[in-house]
Structures are given as C-alpha cells and as structure tokens.
Image (tube, rainbow, N blue to C red; front, side):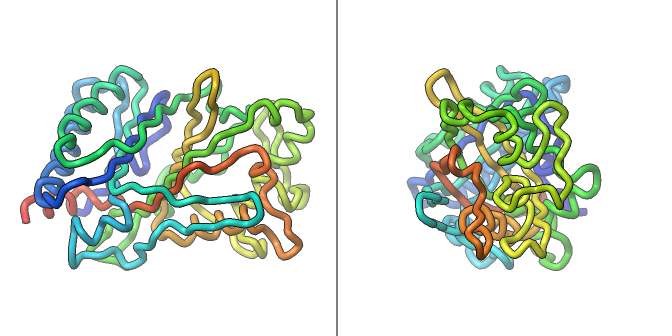
Length: 307
C-alpha cells in the first residue's frame, strides 16, 4: 500500500525547522539515496524520542524534479505562480529541496536538522533555515488563530494527498512554501475591532464570522474563497510563526492533492475580486520568498533510491 510521508497529515507541534537547499552538483543518484536515508532518520528520531512526536516532509522543487527523477513527472507539477499587483507580491525564490521537521522538542528538531545538513552537505548549499514555534494557544503573531478551518481526521488525506488518479504518484502531495514578514508595529496600531474585520474572526474566542458578515477584503474570505467567491479553497496548512525581537513573520506551508487550490488562493488574495477587494492582511504582511515542491510517497522515494 502506498504510504504518504508522515509529516503531510501529522498533528501540529510546538516547534518546526524549515530547511531549503540548492543542489550544487550532478550526483542525482547520491541525492536519491540520501533522501531515502532521511526518511530513516525521521523514523529513528520518532522512535528514539517518541514523546516529541517527530515528523518530517521531504519535497523536491518543481524545477529540480526533472533532474532528480527524469521521466517520472507528477501530472500537475508546475512552477510557483509568480504574481504581482500594485505593492502586493508573491515572489519566486530558488530552492531544489525543502525539508520540514516538526517536533514538540526544540533540541530534537535541531539535532535532526544537523544530521540532515551533514548528510547533504557535499551536494547542496543551505539557502534558508527558519525555526517556527507554537505561539501562545496556537496563534500567529497577529494574535489570531488561522488554522481553525484546517481539515480534520481523514479529510486531511482527501485534501492533501494525491489519489489514484495519478497512480505513479499516489500518496504524494503538492507543497507550497512562503516566508512572510509582518509589520508588527503597524499591525498593533490597529484597534482590535479593525484587526477582527481584516481577519474575519473574533480575536478572543477564535470564532469565525458568518459568511454573510465577512468583509470582501477579509483574510478569511480571500484566503478561503476564489476571486469570484464561487469556490471554496481547500488546503492543509502547516503555517507557524517565527522571529526574534527584530523581525517577525509567518512561515506558510500548504499541502494539497493539486497545485490549483494554492494558485487560486494566491490570486484571490493578491488580485481580489473584480471590484478590487484584495486581502487587506497583505497591507501588513509581505511575502519574502515562494517555492513550489512535490513531496512524493515514502514508497516512491525508497524505490527510486534503488534504481
């Protein structure tokens, strides 16, 4: 039976480590073998530190996929949708490999990350390292819980994992990654009621506003409905906040059985409706990076390591 990577539908954790690499040589067979070994590392750390609930995702960049696995292409594989409108941007950044590590212990994330980096070091440059953390009761740094509408239970698999319609890639997932920076100073100047209007939910109890009460420019409306409001956008979101005392932000990671939901979400947020109602949260958050990846099944990664 085809097995999706555990990290795709795993429950949220307290800590995360996001690693993005560029491959700098043409040793594709070595990379294929080492990606399979990273799966073993995930399993080892999960068993050794079972209380930490370790999980991980290995995903290959849309541009690099053809080099790593020539001749075997997921049906809907596509580059990151580069979108710009006025001062709202979704820039594309380089990245051949994306690895997400999550656990309830920061030291375990760090130790696993060190082993992975050491393993891949001869073949890659580390482009980006971001450490995510659970903030208060699962809120973003805006003060709001944004994962309330995330799918639950088996619905996660239906939304996030490729089914038998693409038999060679059953169990895989289309992964999109963006690092957002938040202008906390400007955001905190807003009255709480204005923040709630922009987010589309109550700040204190996390209750979403009724659909008819949502402003067209609210984040809840523009990130969950298409630009014409006719289609609900369904993604499994893995986002977590990151930052220090100088820079704060959110690492957005989504998984889906197709790249289309993410593309529709981004278009709805950036371009908005025909009346120009874009996602007003983008007045306070700016995307710094963007990458499209595919996370193949455990079976695929292990089989290709032997070929």
